[in-house]
Image (tube, rainbow, N blue to C red; front, side, top):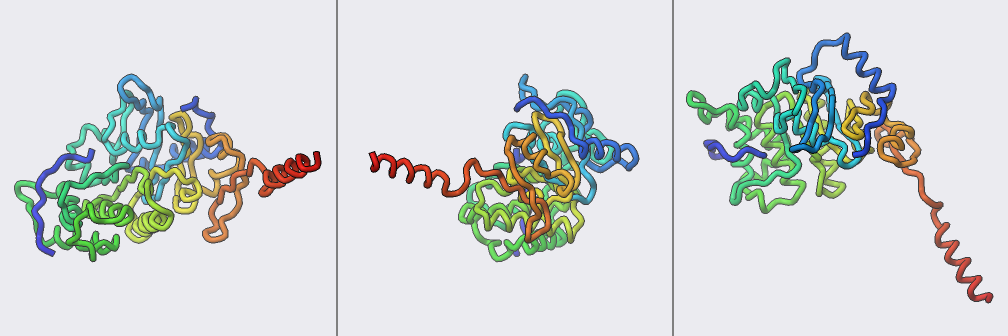
Length: 314
């Protein structure tokens, strides 16, 4: 692949909370006896202008975990991720990265530690896959540190890890949604950050590409030991892939911990307002949420048939 010099570009830019369950309480107790995690939020208030999304919110992202944040729409999932990634400054409280307030750190230092895949990523017109992935090396460039064979190696390995190396010379805007998402993940990998945040990485993807992206994330976590934090809407996918689950409602943490402890029928009804059964996924052994049907299959058809018969009889 032809070496690429990276030039600086534009930066990528509820109802009332429920009381915490015993899982959240258990998590809070354990924090007092463990060392501080690399990425935490301490009593943050998050807002857009004067609209408050969350107040006095505290979370710790377990090191070397695949943490997934779930909850209903407008509960603060993406807002929390933006705060953890330094894109949104808390009105109160602070986000800590390696024990330091993240907003007090230089942007390049944060970018060498924490990578972000935003919810909506737009590639520049006419850029190839290789060039876009190479932009992940920008945080490592400087006056005394220009493009090097090491950068080229890292870009190549990042594309190989995500399976996009055969697309290196293709234009990004020619790719399918699943391919583009893999390219963006490759760019984030090229940053070589120990922490990777993903905001709804499966949005707009069909089921095949959703599973491909989540399988890739799980592989990065398992084989490279990276700490991943993702926002997902699909609770069953979250339960299958996460090692640590954080359930939000009304801007507050309702429950957190291993999916096997957190995902219960009671929690699903309290957080999402959906009655369900939680069974064991026959493929993964993880919790599987099966919503209760409003009516038994065929009941409506039987009712319609009975009405027709009655009309005919009269």
